[in-house]
Image (cartoon, rainbow, N blue to C red; front, side, top):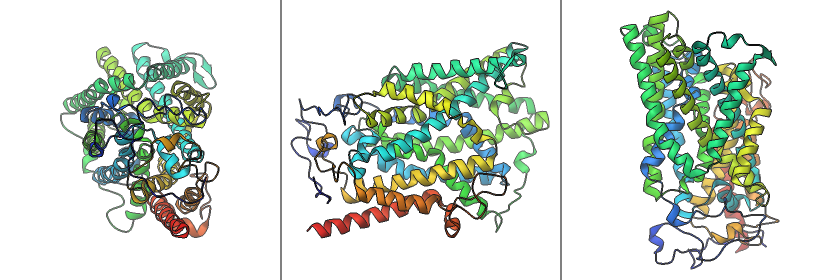
Amino acid sequence: MTATVPPTPPPSSQDAIPGESAASDRVELAHGYVPDDARFANDDLLPVPVERRTWTTYNFAALWIGMAHNIPSWLLASGLVALGMDWKQAVFTIALANVIVLAPMLLTGHAGPKYGIPFPVLARASFGLRGANLPALIRAAVACAWFGIQTWIGGVGIFTLLGKVFGGWANAGEIGGQPWTLWLCFTLFWALELAIIYRGMDALRRFENWAAPFVLVGAVALLVWVAVKAGGFGPLLDQPSSLGWGADFWPVFFPSLMGMIAFWATLSLNIPDFTRFGAGQRAQIWGQSLGLPTTMTFFALLSVFVTSGSQAVYGVAIWDPVQLVARTDNVFGLLFGLVTVLIATISVNIAANVVSPAYDLANLAPRFISFKGGALITGVVGVVIMPWKLTETPELYIFTWLGLVGGLLGTVAGILIADYWIVRRTVLDLADLYRPGGRYWYRGGWNWRAVAAFAVGGVLAVGGSHSAPSKGPFPADGLIPFLKPLADYGWAVGLASSLLLYVALTGRERRAGQ
């Protein structure tokens, strides 16, 4: 047990794959060695054997296509337009954000194909075997909230479209202020999501493989339908920005950019949960690069064009695709829209918001919680906390929710990247990630340098959080007034400050130990 950071070891015979050289860049535990401390290992947390690391470029691209094509991402452009941007500014902001967030996604994803480990196990290298529960539980809490948001949105979409098919559906008796039929849709949708993930990651991979092209076809079909009905596109594309490109634009642009980054900042942490099944670095790099920024930009453009067409047809811009599909009286069109909404929401919610907390909760108590048990807990917590209220206004959704979450998650990402890439140069002792008393045990299982970097980075990132009067939960001058200027750059501030501080503290400790 030591307070210093041990020198990073070269790949040992214990870690090497029999018959393969280190150049293969795929490491696994020695044949026959299985960590047996139930406090830190179970079947779901152990490294994926090399023979099961089979996900290809298409699998990763399909994963991102399936996750990006969902109602909240469709509504991102509308949120920015509501804040005063024109459609070109909104699409530019979304595209730039996803190019930026791709970088930490690829950096943290590198450990997956190489070591076959999920995010909470990777976090043990920097935070310690016990300390890894800190970032894992933060990530799990965010995912539970997102799970509730997405499940409610999916349930409402099903309820709305079925209401068009079955007359009187929306006029059913109320329970808790909502028709009982809405609660039924929500409950059935919730159960369907958990049933799919309960079958494991292979089932998720198969689902995403065919869900991605199906949802893409559905979105394009909606565009064609609106374009034909409108005979062209409406005046939305000619609507000028109320902000311009001058002094009024930048105060809205930067917090909006951080909010758009925060939309996928969660996955920039736990992407090893998926890349651990990758056939190699090429698969995860190309799959993510082709799947994330291109798909999100295309989807933003699609939402703008479809909404513009709806303005030409109905005289009002309808940003919600569910509400737009509900305008048709064609039963086939309604059912097709219903299935598309169902598949789109399931594909993102399971992959983005159930897989991570399932692993994170399993990491908390491996002896008692399996991956499937963690998924069930996620489903329950996601309903109990009722997070759907966060989407009531764009200010609350983009500035408060996404901004706050982005700042904290950016802080964790900075520490992970600093430790894995700068301190350890991507070399880990795989067995010690599961072994108390090893090089990642630090002091009692906690690395105080990571905790200190997280605390300082987190305060800098979100300490200045502020809300306009009556627009959010924070004081207008910020929680910590002198940090208010940093609040609009929360994700970037958190990532940069924690990365630099962690490297500085680790370097100082190493020098002191020499």
